[in-house]
Length: 454
Image (cartoon, rainbow, N blue to C red; front, top):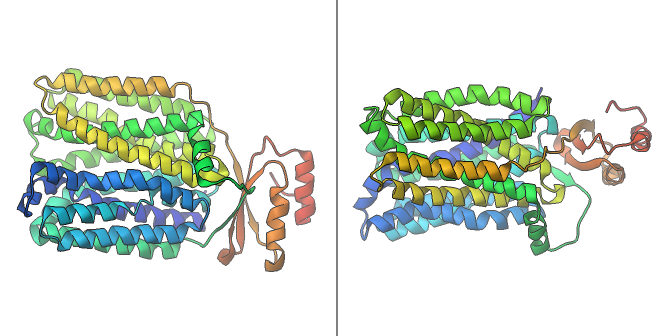
């Protein structure tokens, strides 16, 4: 069971993610209409104003994550959230579409998604990592549904400029949530390579690249679906646009109910690869159902249900798997590449979804998305079961010997990382039980003056 520190940190960091995403998502369902009120607005520039945020995110995730592996993570998160808040203010004060584009680009420059996930990995034990990541994934999904439901209503009250001010307020609230996350100091076997070598090393790892392709594919399909499906819910299910949030919310709840048992199977019984591939198969089944039954209200909802369940399971498993196989000293870098792939997938999915809407045969559009999912399954099939680390929670020794203590720990084969939380006087020691031998256990016993249960 998660301890109080892990629960508090998971809540705070998930809230940071949700507040950012809520501010971002509320703009999407209203800007195509409201954006026309800006001076110099054209359909192309309105689309750019929506999409430039994701482009900035995709470009700057990797630099932020490279820095996060060398420096303290919390100041970088604060910087990113400040940029997000400033960008919202610039857009709110703008009277031309160009000003909105600049504001959205500045907001997107606060590309700290990977840094937030890396910090969550720091402050949670390996055994509870997937549960923490799943909580973050659920918060993102919930913010999506709430934003699509609340965005149009809130715009009617405060206007599009007021909505941008709301994003600024949410960015500042997200900074305040960092108070609940403990100060951490990471210790691992040091490396002297430069940033380029660090990035090349991450990009050379086959299984990491398969996970990057996975998150790209997942968010491509998600974004394309949410551009492609609303008109079908209106035309075939006879559900007005204002009621679509009530379709997505139950599907999200059902997805959550399936996600948590999947997490237990993946972690407790070491079935992550099997659950992962089954989730991709669930996406394929959902899209196949939509190919043949989109004209029927209930079959359309069934296909969406399969997709949402699989999506929630994937959102929970992907960050956890990534944190398990990423190099300890380059964890944030790996997550940064993954986040860039996610935003690029959303960008490509949005573009593809717009093209699919032009098709005369709707089943062909669903067929194209199904083929993409099949390619994703083929690519992912060679994924290997991830390595499972364990964690110990230990009291810190006296301050003057703490640094020496961490060096002695890291000298033991099997000890991968020590995350120190000085304010709480504890440390998480992350280790590989398969590598830790009898000699290592003896050295741990000597170091602590008692035998540890490992």
